[in-house]
Image 1 (cartoon, rainbow, N blue to C red):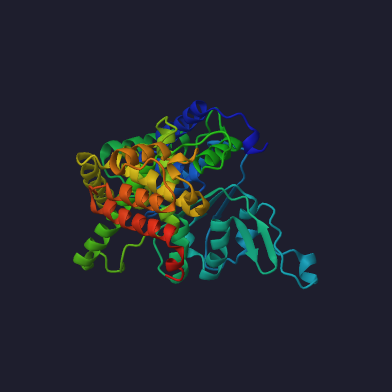
Image 2: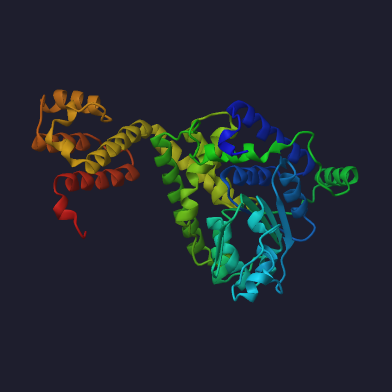
Length: 435
């Protein structure tokens, strides 16, 4: 059944995923944050990497989570240096090979599986890891003349160590969620783990009722903004706030690396790729959704640490939360959130005018259907005494309204400088060609 065609009720879906998270937490002790992180990955159709020493139940965690779903194929493999791409994509088709074409028989391979678990992924050779990159990111098998779509929804990979190379760096960027298992030594936790092992013999516990994979797929459509019926909205000021916190965190991480190079001997800098940067919006939707809301709020930004830190490294989590708190206090105390909302609405208005410059031939305060039309009309009448306008008065109106803002933070001031350039480009487009 197509995901878009299944019945979908947000409240019921939220309850099912919450129940699944609770069940996994009862089965896998002391891994609450990692479980939350991996369910976020599933809801976003992303991949997760778990690092730990041997015997930390990485495989059990992955199998337990995947066992919560029905109607999805699971591909499992333990990587080794001797393996070739056919381990993941299927053996070569002999008939095609006789014709001189290298084609894989993808039946029962990762290509035809919704879920994947790759144990000891860095034991795989670079040639095989390179072949996996496109499948993990573009959801396709692209090898030679063979190009077919892949059904991969999410892959969990596990490793005992990190291997640094050009290929592994690209691979790590595909696994935007990362966690480090620290072995639990507390007597209470060890007792709980032993109790679960005796009860379940180290095997995953199937739930009484599994979540249909079609429901997971439909929910991830909602999270990613693909669904035609439901959406989790993110207000403009929350987007701006999230970007401010992420940038500040990146700056602070690099400051620490520069000041304490002995603590990070293998790390030249901390870099958030555009791929990972863009996933913040999906993560905000996941956070809101699992908290029973269909709209994100500024407080959701604090939980972006699940995406931008290695879960299990408490120093990274604490730094992100400190960055969040710093920016949140700045914006709240100065009432910057209200200002940001108005500025971003104005920016969207400018973009609409840039897309259709013919609108400037008329008084923009009189054009029905334009965002901010009423706001600008009232401001123009009270401040500039403009009741009708042609192109020149439109320019005066937009530039005057922009200058009415007294930025409450440097982030806002920088944004206003770019908006000023946009307005200039709107009325003098020829000056901005090739600049």
